[in-house]
Amino acid sequence: MALPKLNILVPVKRVIDYSVTPKLNADKTLKITNFAINPFDDIAVEEALKLKKLSDKLATKVNVVTITNNYENDLKGLKSILVNSMAKGADEVKILSVNNSKGYDLSPLSIAKLLKNEVTKNDYNLVICGKQAIDDDSGNVGSMLAGLLNWKQANNCCKVEREENKFKLTKEIDNGEQVVEGELPMVLTTDLRLNVPKYAPLPKIMKVKNKPIKVEEVSIDDIENKQATITEYMEPPSKKQGKIFTSVDELFTQLKNDKVI
Image 1 (cartoon, helix red, strand yellow):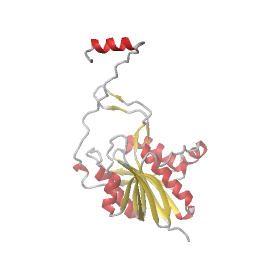
Image 2 (cartoon, rainbow, N blue to C red):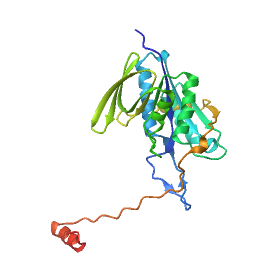
Image 3 (cartoon, rainbow, N blue to C red):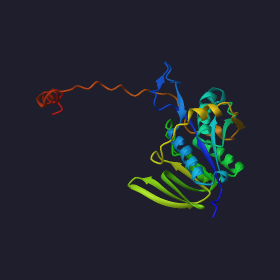
Image 4 (cartoon, helix red, strand yellow):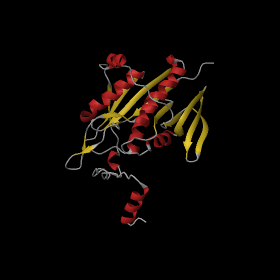
């Protein structure tokens, strides 16, 4: 029996490369360094491609989309993560460029509304997204999207198994794991333990790097209604250098002098 066709959307976000220590400008704004795909979203791309490989490749489609409200400044970083997604095996990639003349940041609800429109227009039946972004740690978009679509959802997935039109999903919860089942359409959010993303092969990157990337201008009526705005960035306090003691007596003396004991 042929498995039902999967039409998968994977939303991804560009974030500061987590392997690079962020720096601040004198005015406390963020000094832009290297960008990378949000690690949780990278896991989502990998899982979507795994499902494609396990299913009939001709009957499964994986599309990757990213959203920006500052297209000109973001283009270089966005193109890099989308080219990597294509090199890994994504069928199509797209940038949703938000008409944002007022310069507002996009709230999780605004992003979820834009994704809902994208899902509805293109008849997706499965959305796989990272459970959170490492820059704002919001963790709201997946659940909001499922609510707007009135779809089933499973968050923090650490294992995904497909059985015809049904998915068996293992989720991480506070006291262990929980196994749930659901039928399409669904929204899944990925946990770090779900998989280990593969690197895109350099020959494939070279093959797709000049492919045109579709850019679609979109708008949203209530973009100005974001409840919180970033006003300042701060560096964490520097750590004091530790001291190595050569004996227990020396440690005891120091603690006594510091009036710890």
